[in-house]
Image (cartoon, rainbow, N blue to C red; front, side, top):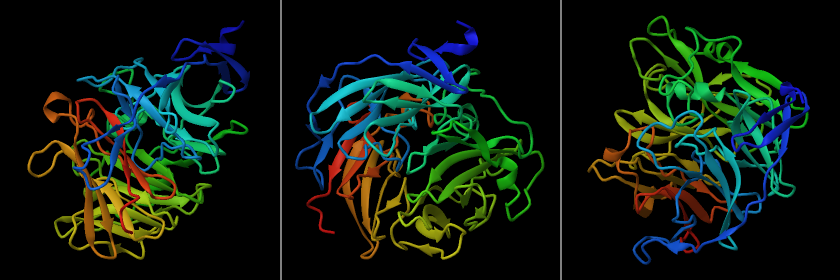
Length: 439
């Protein structure tokens, strides 16, 4: 067979070119492994906390508020990762696994070379429990992979996946290796180690967010770096900046996309200079959101959609203190959600806009290396600390690439929160049960 018509996957399986740009291969059937869920510090936490991954290895979910639960809420997708005291090397692989929350079993379903400690293998479910999506490095490119859990058939597409649309029709994403230029641990290990591929000075007109239609496999440039950078409302503080995209996220309705834009200057001024934009799902109507206290400064972090699909939530520094803030997709209707509680971690609102949940950062003001899971009643301006849990020891790892954030996410009816921790020095996934919390 012509070399152009087949290649090998991360696990060494032969993938065949079935139509232009779509590679297909049959994955092996792996056996389920039984294990028992364990209660974390029974009676010592505000709500019951259960470890839902086995202790035989280290497991992570994915980036914050990307739900690792299948649509039925029965299955939890996790990545089995090695514990390294260095940046992962190109070619090192991890296992994609599925936890059955009813049977208490775990099953390996795929092996991939596209991963990082902050997002795992960037696992997301399609509209049903049948399809699970990840990325892999095929033919020298990071591309979206669809795992059919019913037929064991696997397909690889033409473009990368950072986020899948709510209806499962397409994926969007910035080239995976380029994600690691502004921050390691989010795309896949670079061929050049800690010196990944970089873009030339300026805002590229030919590189940006790629959209791949999962029905036709058509790969198109949805928005370029230039398209978005040209909407920055203030001139750059110095010349020779290079623009990159980072976090990309559909709202729950699939109508708009939130996009983080970063700019690196040779002088290092302003760090990554992160700015948040939104645009319609077809790439039009690009809007800059909030610029207080200034456009080019480091003013906060971790933006996220509100469930209403119109507003966003973000930690923003106000008068020297980080606050939880809310604003519309175009930056209007700005308000501070709490003037007494400090903003931390990776926040997300419930659908009614009353409760916000988040984590703390991996090291607190007292130097404790632990993650706190916070549930905040915005109406009452009060918080409940669901639990505190040790995270990866900062002295033993290269921070921040290998750090372990809580990265919490709700289940569908907001009755449970899933998050990450490492009480015994291994990364694990936990579930907080909110059934007895009065809300």
